[in-house]
Image 1 (cartoon, rainbow over the protein chains, first blue to last red):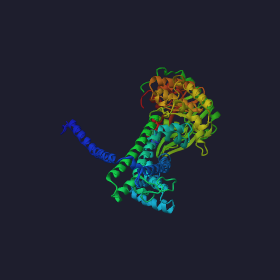
Image 2: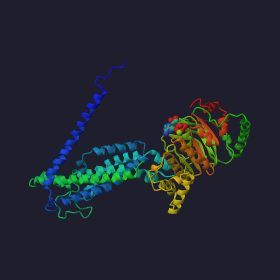
Image 3: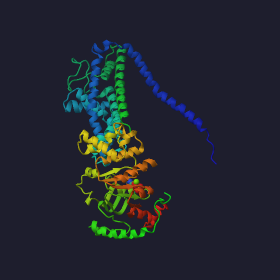
Length: 282
Length: 300
Ligand SMILES: Nc1ncnc2c1ncn2[C@@H]1O[C@H](COP(=O)(O)OP(=O)(O)O)[C@@H](O)[C@H]1O
Ligand SMILES: [Mg+2]
């Protein structure tokens, strides 16, 4: 003898469907609204002069951000992937590994302005790089390392153990196995970490505030790692907070360009990842 | 498993041969096991005649505090098929993995006793693990081709162990695939992903992949358990052909398979090697009551 349901499961199911859809809408609608608003405002202010003329020209800032992002990835990717490989393939046990993981998780929780201060102290002052592209990218790399490590570790874990076994049983060393089987198959997942970190780096202001970014340089395009850079988010930040004379459309247009740049990077990277994933299927 | 394979009747004429085997056993002990005094030879463990390829001596194996093998001694003859049977969880795979040291990576793994390949201890400190695994290949229960082309799968091993040039590789790939009876089916699509093959083809590909490194021993852990009857038949045929050149050890819980393909059979129960002998003897006139019970489907 079982008692009947108070409410028929089918009704609960229907109700939950509505509730969950509403929740999804609550998340999605503001984002769409923001994008739409920014597009309308930004497109109005968008014109060729904006990119090339005046002290707030966007093109040098875009180039600066691009350099920053690429150098950040170039620094953070090898270190992050190596750390993830160590953690997931070599060091399965032990207190040291647990400490490292704990440190990584905590590093991810540190506010970005603190990274900025740390970068100022370490790269700009102690190592005497000065305020420059290199200091900014190194600081940004610290910020995105946890992202890259966690995503890469997860990707490595997804590679089936039987593939490692198959390789080892053929007489491969552990490194040969990692190099020839594990890493190629984890690549799409590792790419995810890189995508996240790249878009994060493109949008962050605080880490470059004290370490790399300048407004209106005499020479707007950096020629070496030790040159200062212009950067889109920094330019937007200064424009908005300290330059009331700049028309609102220009600010919105700058924001629009920044978002398009970040989204463009993301979409490009996602397409690349999809391409890789299609090539590797297990 | 419900009944004895019908092809293998229980015949009394075997008893005589049985006796002569025990006689052969003691002779073989003198001839091939100089350190036999160290090794307690259980009464129902035959020492095969002829060259011994692999040998386990008094193996005790542990996963942490759990003992997976109990004082197992077995000599595996060269260029024969040796089957390991027993209910699941009795330690067959654990025993098999001792021969290519695939247990080494498992947390808490510990081994007492000796494992010998042609008389040499394979657990000695200075052993070249890659070289051991090149000589002692393994085929796994579930086919595990790499997510790369058929060609690259076969070439994987040779590329690990050297830098073969293009024409050498082509030759190795073709020869290995032919040996594994897969060449005709895949020769037109060597560049396609190995994952597009059927389960049975994938398993033969894995066998070809091992053959490409020219091993001396093939360890097979239930190589056909994930396959349909036709594919299983292919694998069994293949094993009988390979026996000419390779020492094969196969784990199977399929007793028909053991009786069809193997010349020697070992029966494991709860980490213990209960009985080891000629396959006909094990299936027709088992000496241990537990072996008898198992092959007659009374438990397991
Ligand atoms: N990696 C492992 N860690 C702990 N125990 C294990 C491990 N692998 C196997 N065992 C245990 O060892 C026993 C023998 O396992 P196995 O050799 O796989 O048996 P079989 O192949 O005969 O089915 C089982 O009881 C199993 O639970
Ligand atoms: Mg098993």
